[in-house]
Length: 186
Image (cartoon, helix red, strand yellow):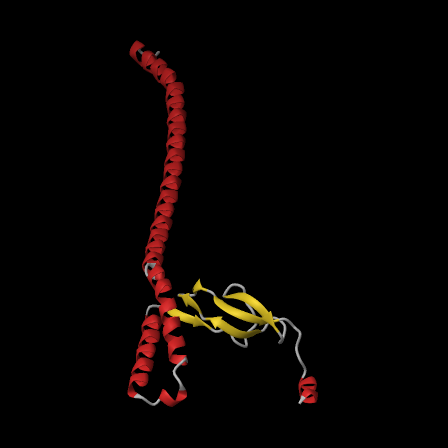
């Protein structure tokens, strides 16, 4: 026969077994919950990190664009002055074009163009090109090939591929005079 103390020990061991298995299951559930919380927190942190990187990239791009186009208004105000200067050079009679002062004016005009180019300003090529409303403004139509620019009334300019002033042009209407008709009239 077993002594009393051994019987009590066996009873205590039998009673603790179900409690230990309950504790183990509870701990496993708690561990699973904590793992789930940890994974959710990791996912939130990763999203926040990605959002921050995107925000940083966006602000850097915005800052870059602001710097690029900061002078756009100033350049837009200078363009009419350059247009007038070019018209004045075009109005100089051919007999006067050999004078030193005319050469000096042409040099100034070239320097203006070089400075604009260094600032990212380019002229929009239009004469002989197909009419493109993104870069040109049609003022009127004339006899010539349909949708082909016949004449430029005012130069257009782009600043880093962004139009700051469209070219003002005359566009062909498709009423093209043939060479035969021109020859018969002569």
